[in-house]
Length: 317
Length: 268
Image (cartoon, rainbow over all chains, first blue to last red):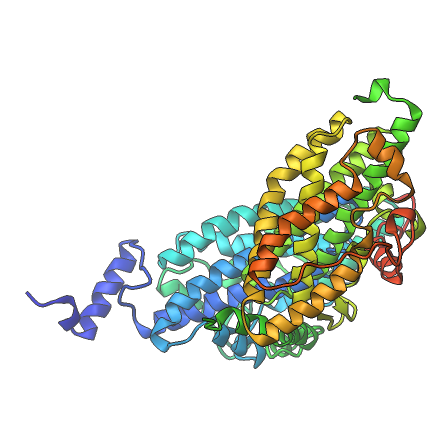
């Protein structure tokens, strides 16, 4: 009987696809086709770095949180995000082993622009309401895309997502609680949320990515569906987001900044004004509002503290 | 003792001590929260953030005890009191390094580790003593704090030890940090003008006894690392327990209360 190693690549691929189709989990040391590994690395490293870079806009409001209770809540929330980043980078590090790359390489990829972070985290925050919107709607959007991958074919990612999604639910509740307090508050507080919603609406539409690869020239959504990493398209996610959040936003007395937005009963879909996808293309090239400032902050602190990593890795007799 | 049978003098002494404890942890936690996202390792970031969060929880418990004693609303006490009313040690108000946290600050990890290690060791000595406090509600809070403090102390001791037994660069930076931290340590064990009232009512051990215990606790590690025992200044340059503070406190309070003070009638 031929050993597994002598099976031709075609057979390995057939065997791999059979496992995927049967709903089996692929583990870190299993054989996998190159494009599966590459897709996972791109997806999970971007997810991980987005958690870490995503801590920065919210972190801007941690010291300023307006009560002891809010301070405790947002500290715990941002700490969770860093924790998700750590979990996901560990998953990525295992996938990177055949290339002899590690976390330090991922950080360099982030700094030189090869590794992207999510478009929403390039945005400027202006008031405390932004911290609420991030928790409520950005984390709410993330729950929609991430819960879809809870059954992802790659076991280590699916398991990390179990914990991440459970915590994201708390984050969305934390954000909603901030927004509810503002919505029931003074005129200035109400104006603060409306302005924040106006700022975040387009980034939230962009969150799910363009409907097809024609918009930006490339998309991994076909591959991720083929390999059962996820099940739905970008547009399907966006429509789920609309279904869930449009009624809630309106019930708070807020106005969604899109006069064309309406529900089409024939197609059971929301029609809406497309965000400026040219702006999206700029953001994913790190040319968004705060892209360079946040990258610079992380790059600078990473380099300024490099002596600590040197000290810990030094072989002292 | 409980709230129903307390003399006005005793109540004042309790309040004074509570303000010292609450303001210490509140400012220490605030400085920790500025580090979020900037620590040298992601793992270090998560741990430090967890410690800052625990410590904010400790501050909240002390402010709540003050609220229960009629000192005012806990959030107001934390966010609204001017610098001259604050009773924290100047060590806890010091900035993390140069630069504002929203820009590109130069935060010093050696200072973060050293301040945290020395401060946490001091806090442990105080908490151990507070577990025996004559003021029962405070003793009960101290028991809760002690459970978390065990891990904080272990964490910072590990960092202190590792950096102190590593490269020459690390040792140099750590020695510079020790000098900075020790220079500000003069009011950590002080009760300021309230010394007599706080000590004689059995609320916590004496300044001298606690300081001595702190020295005994850190001496074995420092000796093993060939670090000279720090000489705590006899007279603090400024005594935070008496409301004497550096400009760092004023600037920190402006940041941490910015949203709270945005609109006085607002509930957040």
